[in-house]
Image (cartoon, rainbow, N blue to C red; front, side):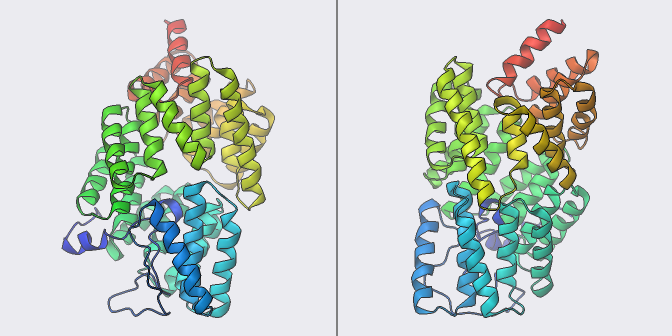
Length: 437
C-alpha cells in the first residue's frame, strides 16, 4: 500500500523522526496510542517533538530537572532514556547508551506492566547498539501494548531491514503507514522502496513528506534524506541543494553537513568537502565520515592526516564496543581498506553469521578481496547487488572481484551511477577500466 498523504497525514507528519533511533521522542508514558489515548504519566513542560540539534539537549535538561522533582514519573524516565539514545547517535558518543539503559530500566521498574514507551525506548537502544533481534523483540512487545506506537512501528521496520528480512520490512512499513502515518514512517517506507530499486518511488515519498512539515527538525531530517538519496544517484547538485535546505532549517544538523561535504567532493571541491568533514568529525566522530575524510586527504597525497583519521576509526570502535555496541560491520568496512585485514575478515564473517543483508554481504565480499580471495568473494558481491538497490560502492566491489565482461559491466555501472562514490575507489575503478580496454 502506498503512503496516504491526507490532511490527517500532514498533521501526523509534524512529529520528528529522531533519525534511526525509532521515531519522535514524545513526553508522557505513551507515544500516542490510538484515538483518545490518555497520557499515563505527568508530563514535564518542555516537549521534544520536532526539535533541532540544540533543542534536544535543552529538552534533556528539562527532563532531568523534572525527574529531580518527580522521580517516580515512569513516562518521563522512558522519554529521557530514548532521548539519551538520540544524543548518543547525533553526537557520536556511545557512552550515552549506558545512561539510556539505566533510565529505561528505571521506567520499567516503576511501571513494569503495559509500559509501551519504555519497551519502545529499549527497542531503539537495542537498534542503536546493532542488536537487531533484541530491537525486533522489544518493538513487538511495545506494539502488543500499543499497536499505534510510532517509535515501535518505526524500530520494527529498522530491525527487519537490518536483519535482511526485506519482504517483512515492506509489510511492516505498509502496516505502519496504515496505523500511524508521519515522518518516521514515511522515511522508512522510502528506504524500503530504495532497497528494492524503486528510487523514483522513494524520492516521491520523501518529497511529499517534506511538503507536509514545517518544524525545523522535521525539515532538516527529511531534506537530508532527500539529499542523501540524490547523492547516491550521483546528483551532486540536487544533494547540495537539499542538504543546504536542511542546514538552513537547522544549522547544527550534522548529517546534513556530512551530506553537503559529499556533494562538494562530487562537484570537484575537495577543499570545501574537507572543511565540512573536519567540522563533522569534530562533533560526530563515526567511522563513515572519518574514512571519507581520510580518503579525501589520501586522494590529494596528504598521507599523514589520512592515517590520523583511519586511526581514529579504531579508537571509536573500541569505545563503542566498551558501551555494548556490535561494531563488526564498522570494523569490516573500515579495516578492509585502512586497517587490520585479518580483523576485517573475522568481523565480516561474524556479522554475516548474525544477519544476511546486502550490506553485510558487501562487507564480507570486500574483506575476502582484501585477502586475495576474489573467487570466494564473488557470490557475496552478487548477493549485495541482488535486490536492485542502487549503491555505487556495491557495484564497484562486484566489479573488482569479478573478471572479464562482468568486471567491466559493474565498474562502468558504478561510475555511471555515482562518479564520486569514493575519493579513492572511483579513481581505482577508472584505472581498472582503462586497463581492461
